[in-house]
Image 1 (cartoon, rainbow over the protein chains, first blue to last red):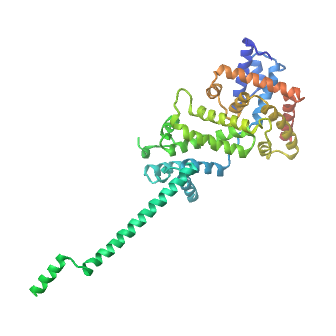
Image 2: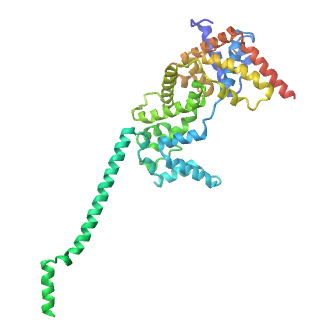
Image 3: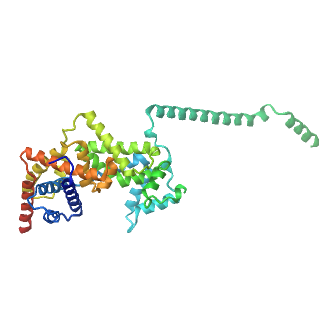
Amino acid sequence: MSINHNSKDDRIEDLLSDHAAEILNGTANIESLLNKYGLSKDAPEAMLMVLAERVFDALPQVEPSPDFVKALYHDLVGSTDINLREWLRQLQIENLNINQTLDRLRQMQLVQLDRLPNLRQLPRRTQFQLAAGLTLAGVVYVASRVRRESGGILSSFLPTAIGTPTSTVEQIDKSATA
Amino acid sequence: MSFSDRDYTNAEEMDLVEWSKDDTHAFGELYERYVTRIYNYCFYRTGNQHDAEDLTARVFMRALKHITNYDDRGVPFSAWLYRIAHNLVANWHRDNSRRKIIPLDDFLTSKVEMDAPEDVTERLDEEQHLMVSVNGLPEDRQQLLFLKFVERLSNAEIGEIMDRTEGAIKSLYHRTLSSLHDDLISRGLGPLKALGRKKERQRQKKNS
């Protein structure tokens, strides 16, 4: 077939485009289309049209596995939504539009947890640093609690053990009054 | 508009893209709208489920990472997403050096389950020859056939994805069918013969 472009090529291109549109609409009729373009049914273009129909038949749409779709959604967005979806599905409520229900839940700000950053996407080094930082913060927090609590225990013993000038004066006053 | 006012399910695509820059739920909605299409693209360009899943995941991870850089300058979001997929698939072919060795078993076997057993072998044979020819085409022609027949996009939409004019897409489609036809003839396989057998089978099924 010629590669140089001329009006005949344009017509063939239009014919093949129209035919492809008909294939997609499920209304392909090679003979009538050839007739419309003034070509006989033995025209070489007829073979290209047949071939196009064969290619279309050989390329059906495929569905990804639901598990894969769910897992990838989880990785991208977070787990809350997907768990809610599953939960709503299990309720098996008649005429329940799951997407709309999820939207309403979001509007009520009940679904906020998945706005936390996805830690799994962070580099391994950052994950370790974060873990170390959190551990250190935990140790500091526990230590400060222990110190405060032990400080509190000591202070409750202090007046009895050592006494204070005020408490001693008060005791003398009390005994004098008595 | 605050997060809580957003109606993701009924939102326009451009709104979702804007929201996605700081709202993962909006990106989740875009993901749900496009995951099957991108998966199909990866599946037909690699020929197997495992690599298709891996590449689909990488497409969306990359899209999520770079969505803040996306700027609509006449290129629809779908075209942007397909371009990411196209680049990743091209890298996959280059890294694995297996462009010509594509296992077709996954989709060939999944398609013939509904057919009568006597038709299965013949049909597998025909389609395998056809798919070998399709996979032997240059990348842009394979992409065109996929976008036209699997994605059912118009020439104008395909042009946006492939960064070409509508006229150029029409012309490329013509050249693609011609070279596919020449390849089949050179291997002794005429498409008319194959279609004749298919129609004969359909007639037999109707009569029985």
